[in-house]
Structure formats: C-alpha cells, structure tokens
Image (cartoon, rainbow, N blue to C red; front, side, top):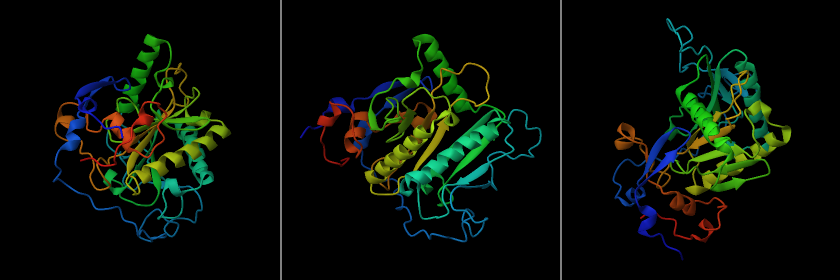
Length: 332
C-alpha cells in the first residue's frame, strides 16, 4: 500500500488562470479535530408528487419533460427604480422532470438530452435580447436550494456579470500570450468519452470541484452537434453518479455554464465552452466546507490536496502516477 507522506501536505500556492488569482492549499488542515457543525443527512423520503412544491404538475400545467415558469423571487426585480446597468427582467425556473423524488443522475440519458436541448434553445431565444444568459443549478439544501424538485435557473441580464467578465478577460489574455485557448489545455482527467472530458482543475478551491469541457473547440451550447449533445448527456450522468457514490448520498453542488455570448459579433475564439461544478462536501456526507474566515476575508484556500482528492475518490484516474496510489478512504 502506498501511503501519503508529509510532502503531499505541504502548504503551497496555486495560480488560477481563469481568475488571475492565487489559491492557498492547506491540506494539513484536514487532520484537525472537528467539533463544528454537522449537517443532517439529505431527506430521502421526498414524495413523488408533492402539492406543496411549486414545480410539480399538480400546481402547473401537466408536463412530462422539461417545464419553465417565472421565479416568484427573482435575483433582480424587473420594476426596480433606475435599474441602470443592473437590469434582469426575466428570471426563469426550469424543471428537469415532473417527479420531485428524482435527480439528474437518476434520469435516463435521453431525458438529460432534453434538458440540454432546452438549455441551448434558451440561450438562442434569450440571447437575442439580453447580453448574458446565465444557466445554473443549485442542488441540495446545503447549497441553498429551497425546493427539492429537480430544476435549474435561467437568469438573463443586460450586462456581463463579474465572474464571467473576469473569466473572459483572463482567457483573452492567455490566448494573446500563448497563442492558444486556455481551456484547450487540460490534465487530471477523471471521466471522459468521445466528445467530452471532466477534469480536476489544478487550482480548484471547493472539494471535488470539476470542470466539464468539450474535446473540440466549441464556443457555446447551441453550437454542439447532435452527437455531442448525446455524449454530454452521457458524461453528465456518469459524473453525477460518481459524485453520489463518493459519500453514498445525493451529492450537493452548484453548477454553472459559461460560453460565448450568442450574438456577439467580435472574435471570441479565446473562449471554450465549459461547466463548473462546485460541491461543498469535505470530509463526509455531513461535514462541508465553510468559505469563511481567512478564505473569505483574505485569500481563497482549500483543504483537500489534489492527489489526496483523486485517490480518495471513486473516479477513474487517467494518470499513471495517481493510479498507483491506494489509500484507505478515511480522513483521520
């Protein structure tokens, strides 16, 4: 059995080229005694059709696939006085399925493909009127999801949000300096198929953070071919299924898509379509990462070392060195 030595746990900094920032790796902190907050296990007796849930067909018109409705509590109000740059008159909730007791990894690939097609359609439809269309999913109460029904949110705006503006600038700078797009360079592949890759970014901050990327240079979801959309449905199911296996729980996360603004005329070849997955679970199904203290007030910090991260996971590790690592699945 290969054991970790202290060299794997040394504190060090890693550069995040997508944010032009540094991440402090403090993996030794995983050894500290934990007497802090312990979460309850996620609810496992969710009714299939809960009339108290605003997303179910009993409350809305009957549907058997995806379904859209207006968010009653949008991030930005359409009638806010003097909106100026901050204007978001539309905020949609998109249901993945009529059942409340199901999640994306439990759907069939054909059902996930319908979700992907709807995402692409919304980017085309809303992108014709708004500067940016943000698609994101919060899964699980731990990530602030107030409704267990499987859904994501679609929030267009007439401005480019901070995170997207920063990532676009960094990718443009990288192309100018190195002559090729940043996200066409990758390593630490953990899941892959013919058209897609899931990688652990060198600079990850959240535990088990992943980046989902197409193999070819693609700028936005609507540009995907039919075969690439099928492959995307397949790899999403594989990734999210592996997440659920990690701690044998319905794995919480926040996910967002980032690609080219659909009708922008200028050259955006520095971009590469990608999705970020940010899971909070750190040590177990009941202990999660708290983005507080030093990492909120001073510098991004992570506790889980990349090598430890991968060796502990149930993911396939596409790296001959990491494949030799075999350690017990425990943190203490």
